[in-house]
Length: 460
Image (tube, rainbow, N blue to C red):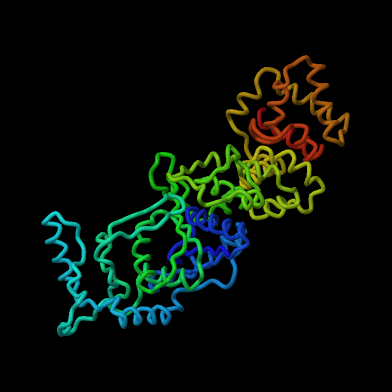
């Protein structure tokens, strides 16, 4: 059975790079009817944030990445880690190092002066003397002194490094707290992980973790190291480029399925296909098909996908979602007409709410450039005349409004813009917005009359 995990640290919010990693793990587990587990790496007790922890779980819930079993918290597992540290000490596979920070700093300075790579010199590896007084030791693992450390990466292929590249690294600090690479290896094994899919910023942690696996006689999982997401200039993604808290995307009016579709395509593809349902992803996704090179964040692509999913969402769903953006349509008798008039123009729910408010809210002011452009020549007289036509005809359907507009243009032998532009400024306040027949039908004849009369007064 395939078992994967996502292991966020609650020292900050979940960003989209983390969400993409979680998504890849979730897809691979679900595709194989396996388990997707959540582990909270909260050993840095001084930096943990309860709010960040809640936001991570909230983000998972929003995008629909359900996990199996209860989350595992590393902060509650210190006894387990201590047991394995003691085991390695007893077996002579780890040792106490009494080197002070000052000694380590001095050693590093000397190594740098000689043009060497700074590293611990293993001076306490086989120490049999009397420990120096007053020094609380750290615990270091005995890394192999020769040979190679190698593993098959599911994305990058065979990775091989000389064992001499790996220090006798610290597995427990002087206060007894265990270190990252040690606890990750312990937990990945005890959680039964078969596949670890993670960012390739962890690639050089893997040899250290393999040292732990080998020392404890544990079978390592299969590793997949995913290239990072870059901005459009090929640099590391920053907040300004889109590396936001996942829940900020919700606040900006993105749909979860658009974000999921966008993220899966950052580094993975299936032919030229751009739009994928979850069912299609579960059928097609395989981590070995993830690109070997970094992917590029493209906001326009995300907006395009979001527009697609908004357009294809049910009106019932949109009515619920729009409440978070200050638009409540539940009592309206023209829900379908309002949404059909607006949703094809919206890239986000924020846009959609703004488009709806344009129709339903009487303009408080008018765009000065629009007034100047729309009210040239006989525009005022044409608008007055058109209003009289509407009042006489008393239209009740969108089609009737449409026909009156068409007939008026034909009768006056004018281009549509001659009446369309001043009428749009009257109804919306500027020159962009929904179809005029749709807008007039939605707001009704009395409101059309009020708005037209108001703009006519404005330009007097």
